[in-house]
Length: 401
Image (tube, rainbow, N blue to C red; front, side, top):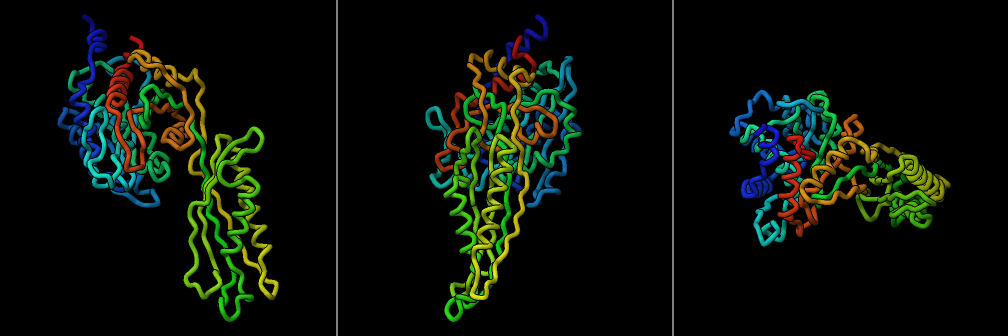
């Protein structure tokens, strides 16, 4: 029997895979604090016989606006058989609500023991899928094409880790697979883009009791602008003809006392759309509304406040063609597992956004996550185990064998 046919007979050890994800979900690691989970993954790889020289960390955390304990963790293996290099990836960080999670199995699901915490299946299930594939390859000495594995940091705070990724350490992968989602049949081939806004409103302070007419309230300027945007359909779900997107004013900070006409206010907002031009149009409408509002509010001397408006790209939208090799290869793996691939487009950001922007077309696959970022979060065991098998097929290039 050839090595290739022996390889195809290898199946995921469900008990080990389940124990792995349960233990990884129990490790704290919110964005910027991924040192513990990174150390655990590294320890398991070393115990499995991987040379420490093959495990690298980049310096993404040193460039991050929040700092951080560690960079992205990268493993690069030469192939034992020919073929284009493949990258398997997931992100290590979880949202703060997962702190203190104790994963417990109940029927076909894993959930957090406490009703006050989330679980961390997002994205420890993805971390486990790719780690399980690598551990299985090492344990059984499976033939494989050139492989890279990457455990990203700081995904949950705006895809910071992948944006700052040292891509030269990846080995120029031709096909990239990211695990971060629900159903194992999912093949996400695109995602929306997101631009942030920082709006600073400068009013004129005055005593709110003695001389309110002398002040210009930053709060009034903000309220007029937001009402204008809402009334004209530029806030919330935005539909203009064939174009769709969304916007949201998420943070408003200002004022120090009730007896002072608010002199300054800061707003943080966002605009999303799959169409970059339409996303820019939303930004333009926000800027126009705030500048208009500033001119409309005057004090008794006819003086106005002012607005400074800054926008910045969080991540751009993308959509892969169905003929892209990573898309076709992922579909084959799902079909071999007995699934029916479903091509989807995400309305949120994924590490795949920046990977594709870096020049590495990336599909995102599901791994059993459900109700993420809530205290109702669970891991669907069957979907997770299917994802593990799909991950092993892709890592060993046996999806079409």
